[in-house]
Length: 188
Picture 1 (cartoon, rainbow, N blue to C red):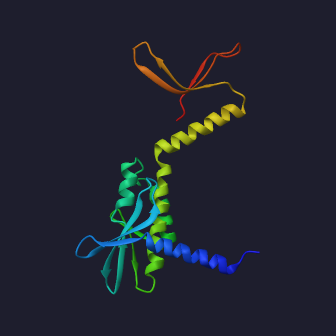
Picture 2: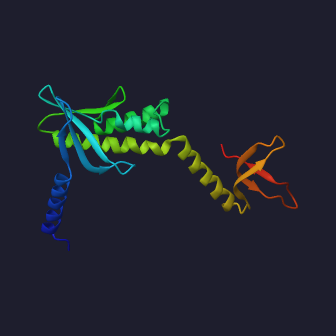
Picture 3: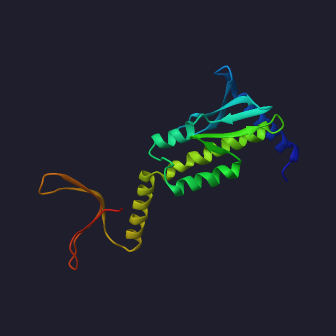
């Protein structure tokens, strides 16, 4: 049987770990940077920023999350992606304004709102896996699995030099057989 006291001590240890690995420093006359022990997909510590505002605190990511996605080839520039982002942010009570993820916290709910912003950043950061290169890679993997499930012989990632001398890349080649000619496949 699990001991409640032991688990409570472990939870208290987690709280101490979190407290010890969170740093706070002034970065501007109005803004404070909070560096957390949580890691993004680059294994960098997540940082958020806080500013006193209207009896509470404005918490933001300073635009880092969406800017990083865009630089990584996953701009949130389609209706479907914007809708997915909006649903995700709404679930955490976070809004996006001019590329900045933000929320408002009172002294009473500061910890909860800070945590919600961090969770929203991590969730939006996961949209990287929707970038076209990742989706294409996953689709190619699905095609490869289908070829195997149908017991179709293939050669992946082939290149041919055409009559013009240009190199052409194809995702798969199906070798010729007695019944069919060679097939070249480009997954799109």
